[in-house]
Image (cartoon, rainbow, N blue to C red; front, side, top):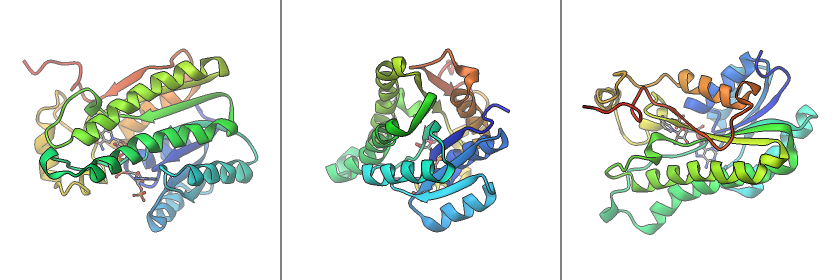
Length: 248
Ligand SMILES: NC(=O)c1ccc[n+]([C@@H]2O[C@H](COP(=O)([O-])OP(=O)(O)OC[C@H]3O[C@@H](n4cnc5c(N)ncnc54)[C@H](OP(=O)(O)O)[C@@H]3O)[C@@H](O)[C@H]2O)c1
């Protein structure tokens, strides 16, 4: 069991990659606190995870919400937090000509400000050693038409992981990021994309298919656990070969 009796917090744990990570963690012996903004979705996810999961409604981009989440987690389970997965994020199409600054800022506020608040507010509640995993994206390193806000936000997440790692290395707190390529999750519904369109995108992936969220979750589990104890400040690509293999 890779996370026996550990306490993990997974933001955005009610859906997709976050839910799959929470499921992998509980199957490895962890207690998990999952968060999200939609109460119904969150409760449903917690029920599926069972008795070792605690749902806490919290907006990751609110420092007050995140502070309350950690207080609740530590009070409920009576121990410090061993693992934090800053996973909550949104994706929006933001063609430059049609996107006012306010919409650009909304993506940055959740995807970057949310990661910052998730990590900063965790600090007083962390066990030693602790592991923090930031969910970035392949989009961090590939410019994508109509996704400048999302791509910029994920580049910032990769960068934050490295600076956090530098700042916390002497505190026995490791920080790494993970960069999934395309994973089959509800995030594409929010973009108005059908499953057929997702499969069309998948044709350019060397492995010719999107990831199952559990395949991303398993890599998050590796970074969260002592199995990766000599890693900090790294970005792990889990993308079916997209970033490493030339299309030619
Ligand atoms: N799917 C992919 O292909 C892919 C690829 C690369 C990276 N990623 C990244 O992986 C992460 C998870 O994405 P996913 O595909 O699993 O998406 P998803 O299925 O849409 O799940 C997103 C989760 O984040 C939560 N969330 C969104 N905004 C939040 C906020 N402000 N505060 C708290 N929770 C919030 C959502 O719950 P509520 O809406 O109820 O708040 C939901 O639980 C994201 O950071 C995404 O950018 C995904």
